[in-house]
Image (tube, rainbow, N blue to C red; front, side, top):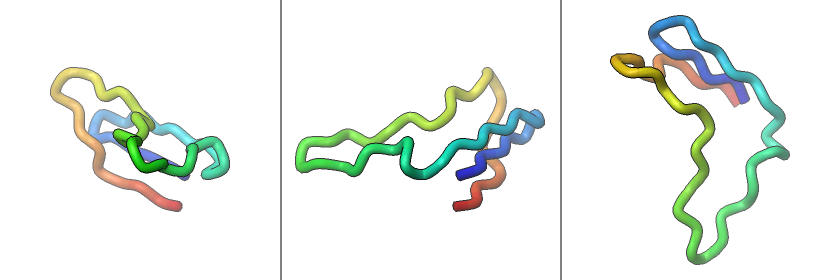
Length: 44
């Protein structure tokens, strides 16, 4: 999985690093964005 932000931050990791969501799961935080930044691209 590759995540890219508007300010040029990029993060790459294998999809096996993400746990499968269980019944009471709230999701996974894949990247913490800096102030005034936003996600502009994602590829699996």
